Amino acid sequence: MKISGHILTPDGFVHGELAMHAGRIQRIEGTPVGVDDVRGSAERIVLPGFIDIHVHGGGGHDVMEGGDAARHVSTLHARHGTTALLATTMTAPTSDLSVAMGALGGVCRTRPKGAARVLGVHLEGPYINPGKLGAQPNYARPAALDELRMLHALAPIRLVTLAPEILGKPECIDALRAEGFQVQIGHTLGTYEDGVAALRRGAGGFTHLFNAMTGLHHREPGMVGAALAHAQYAEIIPDLVHVHPGAIRVALRAIPCLFCVTDSTAATGMPDGDYMLGRHKVSKCMGGVRLPDGTLAGSTLTMDQALRNLVFEIGLPLDDAARRVSTHAANYLGQGERGRLAPGAWADLVVLDRHLDLQSVLVEGEVI
Image 1: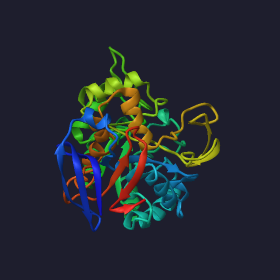
Image 2 (image 1 turned 60 degrees about the vertical axis):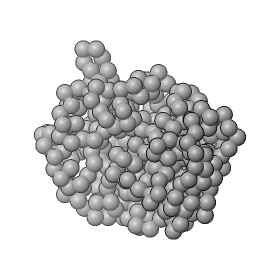
Image 3 (image 1 turned 120 degrees about the horizontal axis):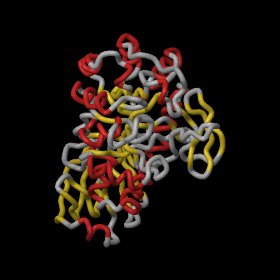
Image 4 (image 1 turned 90 degrees about the vertical axis):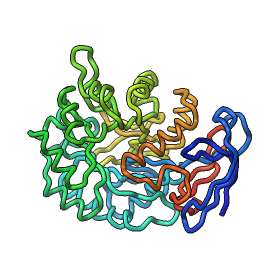
C-alpha cells in the first residue's frame, strides 16, 4: 500500500510517497519541502499517528467499567487519529482496579480490529495526595509495591502518577523505577523541593501540568515551578479549558518535550448528559465535563482537535505541533517504533487536508 502527499519524516517534510508492507513502513521517497509550503498547498498532509498516554474513556464508556469498555474507547479515539494510547484508571479500591485491569489485559495483548493500539495502563493514582484529588474519588492511599505487582500481572502498567510528598521517603521512586514503572508527578500538594527531589530520583514527568498541583509563586515556586525549571517531559491538556493559552505558551518555552494528552472521559464523542468517571457521575455541557460542584472532571478533547488547537490557537508550526501529539510521548514511553514516519516503524499515520481535518487513519497498516 502507498500514500502520497506532504509526509513528515524525522528530518522534516518531503513531498513524495510512503510505502507500507505487513503493518510497517517500508520506504519513504520524496523531495524536501518547507513547513510553510506544506500549509499553503492543497496536497494531503501525512503525519505520525497521535499517541495519547492519558485516556479514561470515550464513546460512552469508561475503562474502569471492565468488560469490553476499552475496545469501545480505543475504537472511538482511533477515529480521531489516535493510533496508540494508555488506558488510564482512576483512584479506586483495589477490587475496582482489579476488575478494570483484568479486562485491560486482553486488549493490551491483542489489538481489536478498527481500534488504536493499547500500549498498557496509566495508573493515575491511587498513590496521590487526598488534599489534591481533583476529580479523583477519595480512595487515595500510600504507595504499595505489592499491590502494583499484583495489578501489573493483570495488565502491563507503563506509567504511575503519584504525589511524591506522600511516599514518606523519596527512595520509593527508586524502587518503582527498578520494577520498570515510569513515574509521573501529579495530584500533589508537594513543594518545589519535593518535585526536584522526585525528578532526581527518577520521576520522568508531570501529569496534566498546572492542573491538580501546587502553583507557581515567586517565593514558593511549587510543583509547577519545579516542572518549568527542571522537566524534560510533561503532559498538558490543550483543550483551552484546563489551561489558558498563555500558560501553554509558558510551558512550551520552558519544557523541551512538552506533549499533549486528552484526559478524555466517557463523554468524549457523546452528546451532553451524565456519564461515569470511575465511581463519580459527571456531566457534559457545552464541551466541558464537571462534577456536581463544578470541578473539572477530565475532558472531551480528541487528539485531532488538540493538533488544531496547537496550530490555530497557540500558533505552533505544524511539524512542532505534530511532535507534541505523537513523537515526544512515544519517546517518553520508549516506543522507538511509533510516533515517527521512518522505514521500519509501525505504519501508524494520519492523513489530513490543509485545514488539518482528518481524511484517513492507519493503525499498524490497517485503514480505520
